Length: 473
Image 1: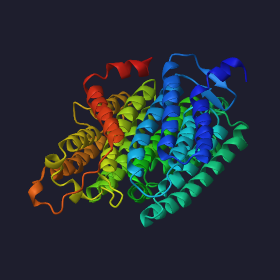
Image 2: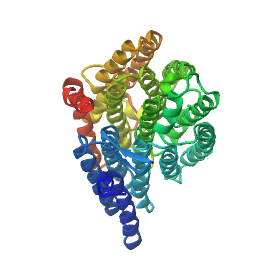
Image 3: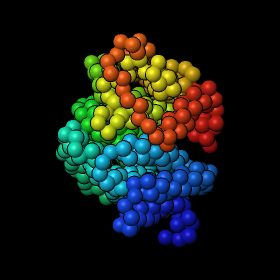
Image 4: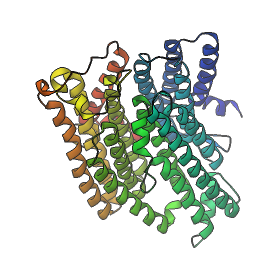
């Protein structure tokens, strides 16, 4: 590895170094705030180095990793998301008994796996990054070990994740058996050099896609999502819904753009079917839920269906449209789960609708922020979510995906109903509710993070030009 390659690696190197530093600090002194501080500084440094290198030329760092503008943008997005999740986690866990110093360490390790994923240019790096991310998530989901639902959620995720990894490895084996290479450009050259689809390569790609569909909770691989979202601590749920899903989608898009797998029309037909089922199932199942976290779980399934439309459309606009939609989705989802985390106490997870009754009259700031996030997820102007949905329409229209766009319209209409239902509950008369929810104190970091997310949601909905220019860059 020469100096140029080494100089391109700071985001990944910084997070890896911070993992080691935090681990050493825990052995010297068990202090939850100190662990969070070290983790936060590492994430901030990774964010700064990724953001300042957006215009740098692409650098191939060994056959496994490529550092380009695409990867650096998403590294910055994942690092910023990790910072917000860490802020919510600090205030959420500091009021709970037990030693929680390892939680920031696990968030760092999961983030490291996500950074490796978005920079992967090789199936081996893809698998290493994915497993680093997943193994950390097993522990994070079960971190509230005194809660039965957390342990149940972690066991479900562990078992199903193992099955998805088996699909991935088998698919990689098929691809290697036929292509003789595992790097994305090499697979792309093999596909481009054949006049007809190779059944073994196509089968391998479909197995890889099936494994990734589990991580993305696409239908019919979605059944774990609601239970895991409900059982995991609220900040961890926010991390899973954003960093975990986002990193896998980014890698999937890079793989298809790099290898020319868009030439497999059969595969795109499968994706189209999955997108329709995911959008409809996610929204219809959300309508039946009462638990706030389960509603947001099925909402996230539907949003991955919308993202799949961008993925199927492909073309020159795919990366730009996916970048804006993911940014809007990350901000809105983090904010929504941030409100849940702020309202939660050591005894109660704020997931039942009764907790939100009359919230506008008791805690107007939180209710307003939650409403902004829900309206953004619904795609209502002037929010970032509206611009994200507009990008989906433009990408789908360019590719003439009229059936998928009709499904998007139907799904958006269904989604608006259950988002507005939560907002209406927050407007109900506060005098009619039973014992008021206690006001959690000392959550300054969470409130600051939520304020920034709320401002960004509205700002990107009114002035999206800067982010658009960055993505077009």
